[in-house]
View (cartoon, rainbow, N blue to C red):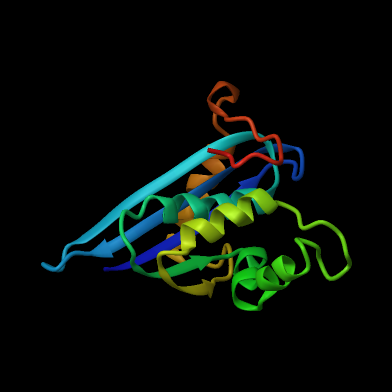
Amino acid sequence: MHVTIYTDGSARGNPDGPGGYGALVQYVDPSGTLHEREYAQGYDKTTNNRMELMGVIVALEHLTRPCIVDIYADSQYVIHAMTKGWLDKWQQNGWRTSGKDPVKNRSLWLRLIAAARPHEITWHWVRGHAGHPENERCDALATAAADAPPETLLHDDGESDLK
């Protein structure tokens, strides 16, 4: 099955404000019918990068069998980590950057690795806020999640898996 995923993350007052992610998952069934599902959630104090990662993670975790997946995101942090070998280098260096600093968001990178493992994924970067309809939809989901009433926001301790 071929699946297309669009994602975005948002954080207000990055790095210590509320944030959210949005994801749109699409596939066309054998009869040619388009199916779509949206995911979004807000967190109390988080970062944009964590929310960018969560959009991709949640979408992949909802796939129930191995798929051919095209992922579109406006996050160079996520896309470059997956396409330019950053993630491989971090792992080879004991989860250290080229500057020898600990890699931020390690727990989420590990979760993304696990979620991506069963799938054949092609990663695509799209320019944010440039009129791409699905990216704009994910941005709207992410910002609405970030702006949700405080009692609906989940807690992000900066190290958890943000389930």
